[in-house]
Length: 256
Image (cartoon, rainbow, N blue to C red; front, side):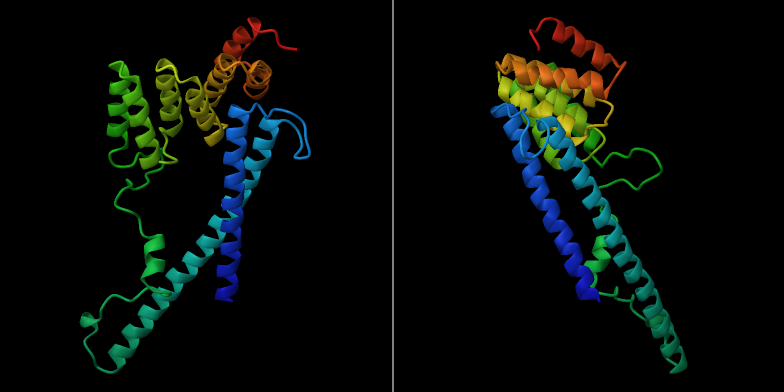
């Protein structure tokens, strides 16, 4: 039974890896080749991104459910095993105080999976920052404020690798794009904005990231893709400041 569960989890993770690879490939295609068209995959590139994102979310949730069940079994089994060891030692007249900690069911690896890491602050109900996360973010912003745009982009890239999925991630990716834009690297700036949007398409800064992506696509000479991207802002975030900004940008473009 345990082997079947492990195999199922492995299958889910393999599918997640394959979808992530497809997702990243599509992001690259959107920026570098302007693949915003209808095709066998269905819909334009942004719609395909949505489809893959939905599949990723479903599989991630499924993986978490399986892992939670495994962890509950490990915790319950370990507790039961500890109680048995205590009772047996007590019945035999041994020193129960000298009993070593019960080895987690399944070995130390299982315990490591459920134990909190030293890197992350304990949850308290709100958005938590990892230890050093705010400091690293502020340091990168400081470099950007000094006008050293290449160094700032590198700082934000380092931050993103150190704190993936953190609450400051989307803002860091947008600021990385701003730094690259100021450095004259329009293509890499577009990639940064796309990463910011696709990483959290319902995030507080997702609309801003999409506007900036559309503007950079226009700078790169990909007018049709820029039009589609900017028009998408109003669809996804109607009535928002980002939608107003996108509309202003569209006013100066010959979109069909």
